[in-house]
Image (cartoon, rainbow, N blue to C red; front, side, top):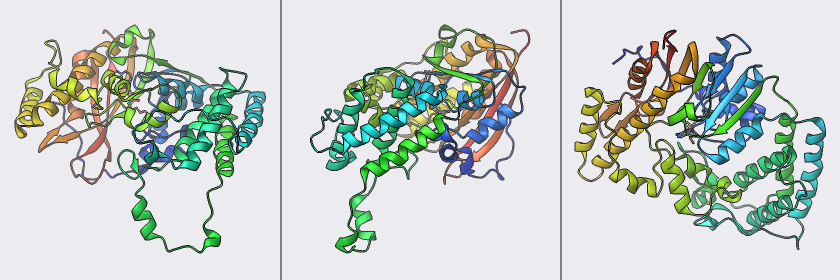
Amino acid sequence: MSKIQPLSSTRQNADLTFKLNRQFGRHGWLRLTPAYSVKLVSEILGASDRGIRVLDPFSGTATTPLCAAYAGDSGTGVEINPFLTWLGNAKLATYSPSCVHAAREALRSLISQAIRANARCVAPPPMHNLQRWWEQEPLEFLCKFKAALDDLSVKESPTRDLLLVVFCRLVIKLSNAAFNHQSMSFKDKLKQQSSKRPQPALFDMKPDLAYIAGVEGQEVLDSAANNPSGVGTVICGDSRSISGVLSGNYDLLVTSPPYPNRISYIRELRPYMYWLGYLNNGRDAGEMDWAAIGGTWGIATSRLAEWERSPDGFRPPYLDAILSRIRKADKRSGPLLSNYVAKYFDDMWCHIRDVVNVMAAGARVHYIVGNSVFYDTLVPVEGIFADMLSKAGFSDPRITPIRKRNSKKELYEFDVSATKCMSS
Ligand SMILES: C[S@@+](CC[C@H](N)C(=O)[O-])C[C@H]1O[C@@H](n2cnc3c(N)ncnc32)[C@H](O)[C@@H]1O
């Protein structure tokens, strides 16, 4: 396996995560915890020529294509999740001044309908434990806002997309969701209440929902007016067979694929996906998670228990030894977790051996990946990626540690880069 640089000086660097993106206009429109940072992508783009074709096969919130478009390049994302595909394209669109103006006017009318006592409501989304997500008053506001949005005469337009983005921001802003963990959780009401001093009745005011909607709307619409000079698009598809999704000779690939860390993207995206009709029940959520690499939500777990490794997967003896250690570490969950890791690398191998077909000769690829620990076994994801890239026809693989992930001392993120050989 490839050697890596020493890690002792590599720190947590929060500005290399999604946290930094909130201050960068469109990049901050909606949050996805595993999104990576504009700074990281811009640094990689900055080392290349301009006017190039940039690919991100695991586009997520479209950080890479949007950075590429703002740099004047052409950015293409591939994303398996239809909601993220829609969001990515909304972030990449060019909005004319008249479209932004129309969205501002429409937003005023949506807000005034959402606070009207007898306005029409849509049914709340069919989510489990709805009352945990929203209190009665914000829920009613959202149902009225959405009804007014659905009643707009234009069904599909850039103006409507902008208003849907504002709506998605409100869905989270007005919820009890908290983002103080690696992924999303709920605000601890009891803790919040006990930590606050009792307030005099005069100050026990309800949040002004109309004001909040105005602030969220303004942020989205101001950044919509700042159009990228380049172009970008996100295609909904499966990057395990990327040459079936797109053809082309891309000059640069910059991506952060799923890590083998059992994070479910659907879990965090559920509120948006239910409200916007991309999800109707828990079973669909499990199916979507199973279709994505590294998914573990609902049905995905039971499918994993029955899953078997592909005979033509990437199977170096050191990976077999790692899988066997994980399997034996715990009688009950060891076999499931070992299957999880094995499937992750089978899926990634499908992607890497195909992605070579859509890259130009001499193109550089950058995979931002994190390592993992299962029981006491470290999975050196970065080294395995470097080896897969070499086997698939890329040369000069390099592993650069970029940041420490959390308090666990052995968890890091790395940039694994390589160049497509001239002859492959
Ligand atoms: C770590 S996230 C990418 C985050 C992204 N860099 C950003 O800044 O938002 C990985 C993404 O890969 C997507 N994904 C998982 N399996 C996929 C597949 N087979 N094909 C395409 N996308 C996939 C997930 O839905 C998720 O959005």
